[in-house]
Image (cartoon, rainbow, N blue to C red; front, side, top):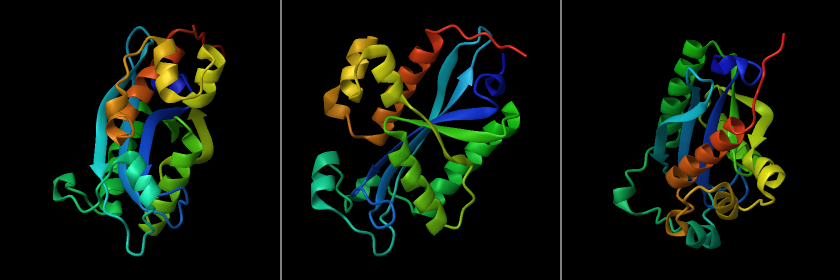
Length: 199
């Protein structure tokens, strides 16, 4: 089975974004990670290599102190090696489009924990950067809903425990770590439930 046959011609891409607040229009995107999901010869989903960037706040962006304290990001730390939104998104979108072409998928679909939050920030940033977004504009696959259905949990860390996936709370709220773990959770849920393609 090809990945295009698994979810209606969509390429699943797990995304996590760390931000400086909750308002996608006014608050800065500070870190983004995306992981394209592949499928092996046995029809099992697996996470590919992460696409990861620290992002410079856009000009005039709001930086909520409470949000920075929560995610532990120091926006002035030079070791972040942050890039401009347009550069980070451009590189991620280019890589996703290449996978879409290779897999003959017609659109990417965002997979995330509270996915609509990430989708909102992704679209706001791509609009600011005047970039065409490869993701479906409103459809997502949310691991919050999957976790509630299969494990009776909605919090990522608690869902991991129920799913039998190792989770380190000291690394949480890093886009790279959370995306890797969300990808593991997504693949485990999908791989544990048999799917039979019908015409």
